[in-house]
Image (cartoon, rainbow, N blue to C red):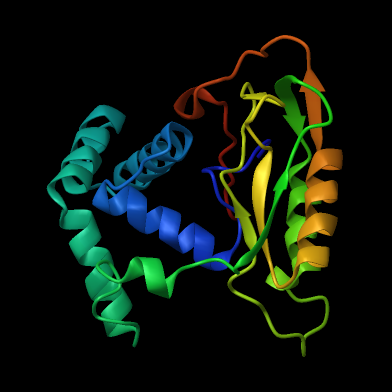
Length: 203
């Protein structure tokens, strides 16, 4: 995993992005390809499709018809979540109000992202536990995260940080700048569904 899969990182922000993908409100191409590629492999392994092409067609049909979103809503409600999550997602899955734009120190193109460092930045915001007794802040995280190949430094931020307060937001913004490597020219990106993968077998 060499970059954030979609455009967000953090509990509530990722749920909102997933709902936007399900409902068609917004679909990042990177997240779309990863979701369809993984979903197609699961359908094939589960014997629900003959091959990856048939599996992908089924997934696209479920996505575009709204069937996938409707099933997700039923799952959330069955687990005790809100029955109107899809229609009320903006108020239910929002980030913290304090935000800061993490901007590149220079203009260029993203060549590499240290995803572990990104995760640690979210942990420092309170989005994860350092100790078992720690409470998780579900509203902190990153929105509008740039990906490999994106041009930054001329109005396009690396990410928008959602934090409890301004100081925490600025600290995370600095951490994101450190986690991202900028090149002078665009770097080639491999399509998500063409990336080589390893198959692990239980023994």
